[in-house]
Length: 311
Image (cartoon, rainbow, N blue to C red; front, side, top):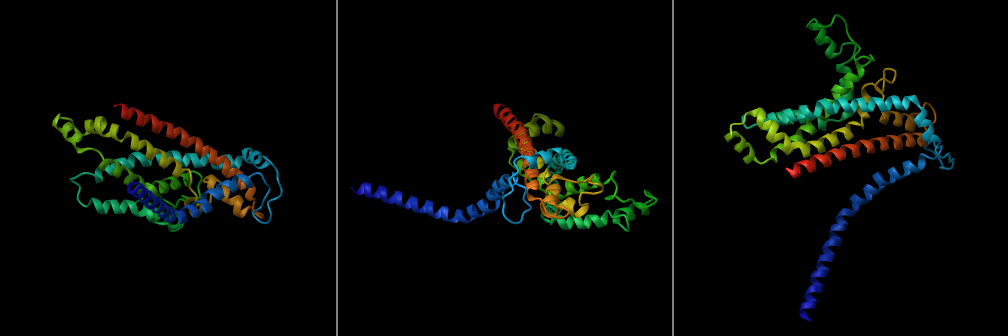
């Protein structure tokens, strides 16, 4: 009888602890439901209505918003630009961040903590502020870049870097790479510091050089984590809004327009009455495109992890 009472007491204590844990989780859960799940669900609902964002949601139009989105060349222009931005940011940033992380993880490098802080500072700096500063740096009139290039004789006259269709996207991509570079570097650093040192010591004893160690020891071990970094980098790069909004606002002639900016324009500006229903439909279409990319990259992650575990 005493044993039964003891078990009941333990069970009651565990239940109380569990309820206490849920009590701490509750605020986060409420905020998650209110500001993440609810907006996602309602964006699907609004996409079937001709709704301006004000008043009652009553004008049901079915798939008309989706048909208009798919037929709109400006949407596909923004779609193309978003994927161009993502492709070049990931292509340059991920391997370059790995290279810098290897250098910063080296035991012979002095002041590595200072360099890590310098690289990470843009990550914690407000993107809109960076965009405004970059707009002045690359400005056609008295811009820092133009002044420096003219001072050394590379340019004869100022270039409108953000106002030219030949250079605007390139500048957006370069600033985007620099802005989030520190985060990818931290990911790689965490992966490098988790590698077993015994394998590198064994490779050194066997006479392997730096490149051989990198190619046959480091890269295979980093492959699963690298696939995850690639996935995160691609998905994050597909959502660029504040940088473009503050630097070019999609110009010149929509040459740097992105889908996030396209959705914002219809949801909150609209050139008159906003079109929240249409913007929701565009967001849903783009969301499915990102989902497809995520699933494709996730498949790569799974395959890479499977190959690594088999070794």
